[in-house]
Length: 320
Image (cartoon, rainbow, N blue to C red; front, side, top):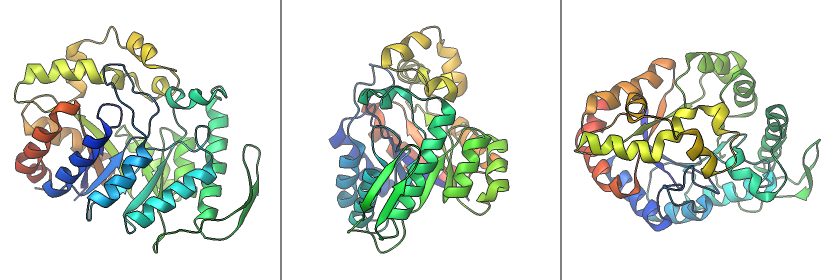
């Protein structure tokens, strides 16, 4: 049976609420949690973008047993990989080993803010590979020197590490990134239920490693209200990863999605009070070979009622 997770979406929710929502999700019985790591929201209507690592520190203290995970952190521009390793190790200690480091090649939306431009995807994959090598080496606790094409590390060492090793899961959208995830990572992350992606990951050496997917949901007792909210806050999600990785700002996502119709969103995002469409959306990932699926409830003001509904109806249905 697949494990079902809860998503802390920093782009739509104030930072204090992210923590209280996670406490409620843990009590409701979610199996794990993931948190986005953004500098900007996808669209202005979402209205937030707290620093994920500060939230993780608070979440580690506020919760008891639910696993934590970044979904995902980009270690190639906004953060140097040596700094990512230190942050991850600290969260691993604070959470008593409950933390998984999810890494990916990032989006222009978040990484352009440091003023270094946005490299081609081939270069981003090269940078991600070096970053994972550096982070993995630092997780050993030894001194690390690294002289790569993109990153340099000079005599770095982590002094605070959790007792158990921190797993590294890697986001992938195609064969090249799936190979990176299988070769250098301990798990696969994807936002589309592609059997081919799982197959590429396993053929490259990822067999037996966890595979994480994500499903957006817009629960509301009123289906029409749910569709309206999902159209306002999630129409950008229909763009696909090749677009999502390249656009530089919320205004660009707004322009790209201005012609997305409510019925287009409703066809992709389960909206309303019915359990069955949500189960079917999760089942697509399970049938594709994923064993962890994180749910995203669209809309910050509706997290509490979603968590209550999930505990009462959705989670039992997903575990049948």
